[in-house]
Image 1 (cartoon, rainbow, N blue to C red):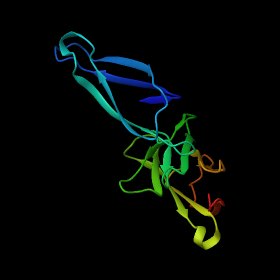
Image 2: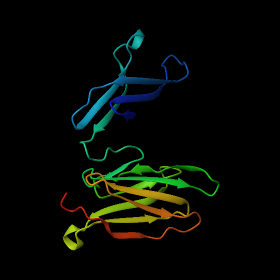
Image 3: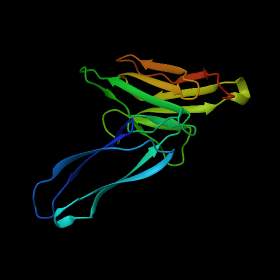
Length: 185
């Protein structure tokens, strides 16, 4: 599912019960701006023998203005205040984006995988250190030696911090106790 502006794109593969090979379909529809919330999208057959059956159902979350919208490649932390993305380059020169994973019940931390969902490459944690030093803190841990860049954005202030690891270097623990000073916003 992709959301660009107010255009929702839904791609899915469906196997026909008659034995016909699966086909890929793409549907685009203009939708008016929606209030923040979670909406269910349904792709249904508009004719033929399966009319009215829902083949695909998916939830789409509309984030409030000035907040993070979670996607496969964007990790949203602390009630959507912080948006985290990652890019990588491996030893063969291949590049890509990190895929976000949020552990159940976690609002302040998440994971990114690069090569397969079963192999998390990065752990990212954003902590509220405002009571201690008037800053939000960022911690990164990785068991990888690929080149990567992690970008953390405070969606309220627009401030960004970037954290990198060069190719071939075992990534050290990143501890940034002064990442974002916008505690009162």
